[in-house]
Length: 513
Image 1 (cartoon, rainbow, N blue to C red):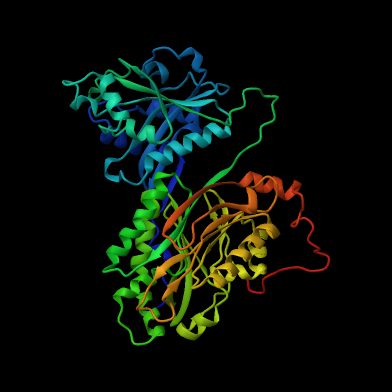
Image 2 (image 1 turned 90 degrees about the horizontal axis):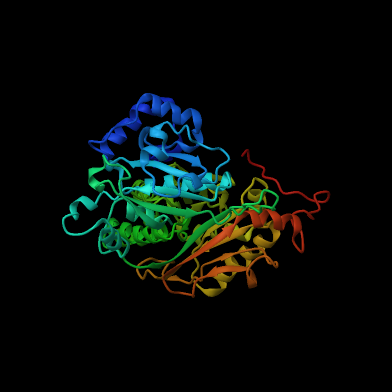
């Protein structure tokens, strides 16, 4: 098999500012999302872009505009009582925008019905929250439609409908989404948008509060840059089909998405479950047959990363390239793009049983949550690799591993914790548990997956941010503060990174990077 071009599998999802050339796309979205309602005129759209360009955001998927949102900053004290959409949006022109205001008001948010299920609304709400943090705004306020109400208006009042949506006995496509994105219902607004027949003119007045807001300009503001990580301790089991494997993986992506994770980490070579579907006489032959699932594997995780809005480190997978067998960890970004890290150091067992070859490049990946690196199992036991990655900006090291017994696991664990101390970084490790009785040299698995930190006062006791119980299938979540890492590198009890004797030694790669 020749080297696979990962561009074939990329989905290319981009959250970006709207441009003047997007006008027709925005109008098409309005027609699909709000049939029968008046669309923006060209003058209204251009006014929004001219007055507050950062607040007009779009989502482009496969070069098509599929979602958008419009916002304005207000001195909300002028509008805190009853208001309507025309008043709050200045009839769509937003000439009432106040750059020194404290409230970001969401005028409109739209997702093309043909592309729902890809967490596009969440991406737009996250972009608004990021804007609120950057501009130190007190809150985000929206007058949310309740388009499901028309179907129940004969049987209940708008207030009763909202109560049922909040208790989850009814589902509203807008209000339910807003509540799941951290907005709190404050009250009901009648006559908000009279042309909205689906909502009977009502809107739910909702608020999201920026906990990092600093009301006093003289007060010191310490930024927080949290990254939520999910680690999967995965149960190895026989599967009857690739679809059965895909369903297990999707379950964990659904869980990570529900908890609004930025990254999810799967174990090394957990795709060897698929050997349940392979008949081979020799272990090396079996692993090469496993590589035939690579296109399906790439397509599956690219789709799931976009659908669930989570960056996926898809464990690792045996892949044949130019007749050589490699152990490759793939990164599936939630914007639909891909990256890969070859395992560099091959264990004696991998070399003996399967004939695996090692890669030759240390990769550092740009993501929407900063720079990361992936070190596949044995690679974390070589400190030079981490040092090179951190020198290139990596702040989180992801380590998918596969170990058969506790001694092997402890080598991965202790070295991961050492890398945290040496480099002032976080390290997340994920391993498999259970057994595959029909797979020679890979029957047993032992793991206690975890997320580790530097060992110092600002971090959790024992330098363990989170840890799985040993040898059961489970997941763990943890919020990691990247700003704390930066401060620790400058002010920690010991300054390992700063105190390196670069006058005596250096670490560098010999291959062109």
